[in-house]
Length: 506
Image 1 (cartoon, one colour):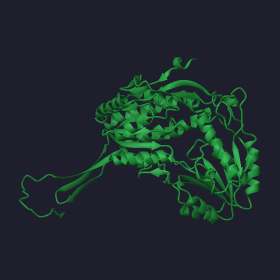
Image 2 (cartoon, helix red, strand yellow):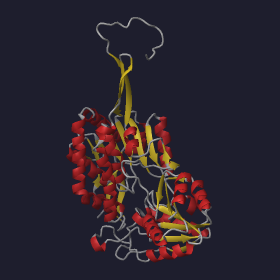
Image 3 (cartoon, one colour):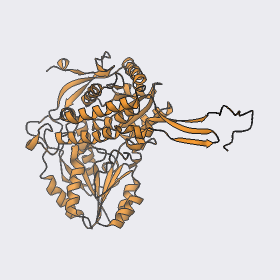
Image 4 (cartoon, one colour):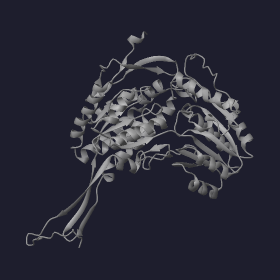
């Protein structure tokens, strides 16, 4: 099919798919075949302004709805999502490449936030203090911000929008979602579902685009907040730009997650979980385990166990379902595949041993796909860029350490603080680890410690910019602002008189 014959993925404005007039597009690949499947519109400033204006109109209607009516929409959305999630999983797999079961898992974790949001009346109610001073009552209201922007990454095209949008919408806001241009169709599918659930037009808008659209959201005086997940350099740029423009910001950045393995740990459990956490979704997860810190003398045995498990993994087209489903799909683009391979080259040049090498993997029948095999590295120097920087691919490195203290020091010396884990049967060591490690999300014999929806997701250091984490109570606080009201209703038989002194509570 000629490139000009390919469909163009549109925006979603005023409650309907909206064709772009910008004349700019970007290719959307099927990563398993390496073929361009569609083009996606890239908004210009006029389209960005139109999307934001539509959201403003949607906010004015949606925020006027009663809590009971809003809650009905949230429940309807939850039921529709639950019934039709296989459709969304197929869309994710076609554009991202992750296997269908992993795509379904992404949706289910996002659905947890939808379910939390259905209980929003309890989480946005204010407080009331009667007779705080003589005849005076003080109470508070939580109200929506207005139009809020969500900028989501390619690796979770459904889950990350579902981290933010249901809570923002429940609180009465209107959302403008700017999805990744690499896998933009899941956002349109979600927009259609919101409309079917009864959300008024404009209250969920999808703006397709690149940096121009992002900057349009960051600089718009109408957009009140920005929620972002992506790499640390972009997170920092978004935080600084949006904050300079007076917006609330939650910007979640990159990671370099470590797993500390103590000698008393069950090494079969460790090997299983290291493989799961290192190679799931082809390593394209901000909570993936990248580095195993093996406290000697366990490294050799652990490497042998991991190597044995890698040999049993299958890599292929993630759209193959049932018994034919592979363990791993491709990476998102050929450019990203080359970047991941470059980090393995760096590790090798810095003196590490590549125990299992996935750089040359070719999948039969999918020779042009963006595949990269599970890779295991031993003896990676902690000075290597392959150690200090986020790789975001199926590359697991083993670093040998002499003690618990050395392992914790390495974790704490890094610039990221997203997730980490310890594997041990020693409760005292685990308790010490959770208190000493400078990381926002910690697993104890759990390799990917993503909190459930009623807690909040977010790291420390250069893994999070801004004060608010994603979802949970943090999410409701982020998407509402409080008014405090002091009221006095005088008894008709009394009169306050004149008093120019500073008001005092009596």
